Figure 1 (cartoon, rainbow, N blue to C red):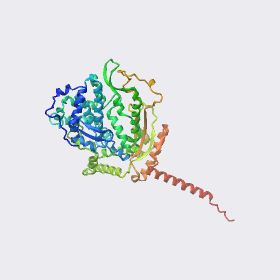
Figure 2: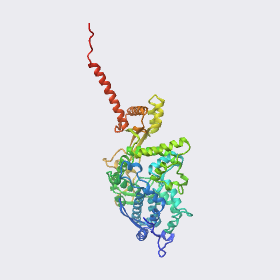
Figure 3: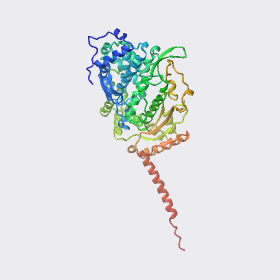
Figure 4: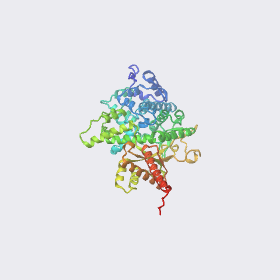
Length: 539
């Protein structure tokens, strides 16, 4: 995509005040005109032909946004689903497209709300920029950085805000003048950032603007519509829902809170309830079958270990996002950095780098961490399953200090919660619905829902891993792995869990074969001893 898109020509150039006067139908007409005259059209695999406003094209043609071409949307999942190798780049464009369609549809349906040209542009830009803060390997990088620097509360939404500040800085921001040409003044920066990460302090008469890209109330937003449709298509997983119907049957209603305050919020026709259940079910299935597939979790764990060993977290500084190394960070650049790091003079640091390089080599050769087993944790919904606590209980179940130390180094316990987006609660109860011909919120309760709908919306399972694999295991490791497997089985039995053992693992297979061979040899020796006739002593 080139950067030939232009701002309005001198003959049609408008002032910020002129843009502010464009509202409702007029604002949508102006956006359409600008897009047709100076925008770009691309062919997307999910949405077909997408028309991009010229200001969006200017944002896309920056180095900060182009970096998303090299960030896989699903991180390490492409090692399990080879076709799921799409990037954050196309997802961001798809989200901007859906955001524009929804806000323009609402502007036309509700002319009295006076949705402005600026507001429409800000919503589309928020959709485009909402993932610009993602690091290498997407969500896995967030979790890793937050674990290494908990005081910084590292989230890609917050990083996106810092990059937006960098791009729109009045002194040096490369997009500041472009935004100004379309009437977007300094307040636009704060509005776009808040649309990406609402904080609950938004103006109530404009709350609907902050429910389009990132809806904290119900979890229903254009970001989710695009990534579920795109990820499901690329992974070739079943299930479907119609985001087109969501747009067609959306409107803005006045919602009265318990404290008497009234807010303008997005609502959907009550007949779309089944369509929303389909969407939430697709989300649950994608998390369980793709995003947190057991092997994907193994690969994520290996990359976490990799980053910790080579001090990857120290390269990216949260307070230097705009002009630091982060804007050069992609999946491949991180791999290159690890494989080509000069060996430090410090022996311990050099050893860590070598271990990190070895992990990358193991991933490439598919010599992954051993999966000991997996179990459902049938705890009460309120009880938190803590992996470190479980590992400690398993390690201390064997009276051997060396085994405890081995577990601390090699045993990984990963609890995973799967839900419909609202933890243990029914997400439908958080959606604003309206009835045909009514302009107020329909009050829902469990009793009004179909009895065929699910009653449980959350489950937790636990994955048990070992960092060792067949080629790394000496006799002591094999013994400890065998002891760890037995301790995991014992812990599951004590908690009335059923452990699904992954018998395909080579190490466990070889251990099982050796056990069977030992038993067979012992049994054969006993049988032979019983069948050999005893010679009688001659008189």
